[in-house]
Amino acid sequence: MARTITDIQNGIYAKIAADPTLPNSISQSATYRRFIFIISYAIALLESLFDTHNQEVQNIIEAKFPHRPSWYRTKALAFQYGHDLILDTDKYDNTGFTDEEIEAAKVIKYSAVTKSGGQLRIKIATEAAGVLAPITPEIKSAFDFYIDEITDAGVNYLVLNLLPDILLLNIQIYRDPLVLDANGMSILNANYPVQEAINEYMKELPFDGELVLAHLVDKLQQVPGVKVPHIVNAESKSINIDTNEYNDAEPINVKTVPVSGYFTIPNFDNIAYVV
Image 1 (spheres, rainbow, N blue to C red):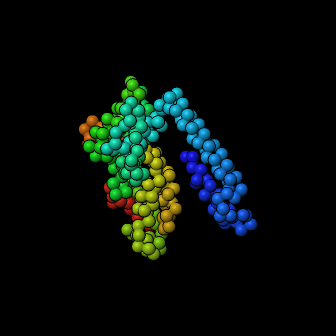
Image 2 (cartoon, rainbow, N blue to C red):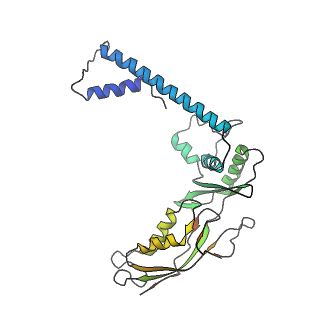
Image 3 (cartoon, rainbow, N blue to C red):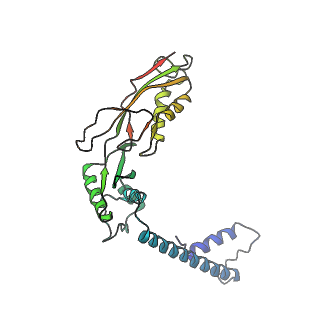
């Protein structure tokens, strides 16, 4: 955004004041102050022209560029709960709202949009106490109306606001008994590093990212006290979008992408620590 002439002048004056080798007259009629005004005016005008050019380019892109899945993802994240769109546009008038109020209204924290069989699948999630979660039915109703307003005519889409896929892991950890006890607890630090490593791997996965079992093994291999991590079995359970109930568990052979866009691990009961 273009700076004002005053802001630019003050920046130049501050640099002059910090350099004892430069003149720093308090006289408003000092010749160098006139030069500073002229230079500041030119810089402000140039920055204003840059802003105008940038807006013109953005307008051309919005008018000409086809709405790809990435555009719908951006718009999903831009949704502001409780705010109305400017008539016949896909934008909000945020005049009078603080940055904090605008950010608080942006309840969609995660989104991924893919195209499958001629249909856009818009996956969304929010955060509750730092944990990914679906938005409430009230917010979902407003979001559906918002998407219907901004979607191109004739586009077939499906909004997926689902409970997380459940990840079921059966793992055998060959441990160093000098570092980990029989329950997987660190003898030195009294924490559970294998469980922590699994949670870290899940947090590192991007929303709607691909879970790769080999990458999880690599993560576990780096845990102090773990000699050989072996995933005996891995399964996942996803929500049936028609019944809103969890489907039966399906095996994960090599990799998988969660239907909801993210996973939850109910417990670590099926991790066995052997010597």
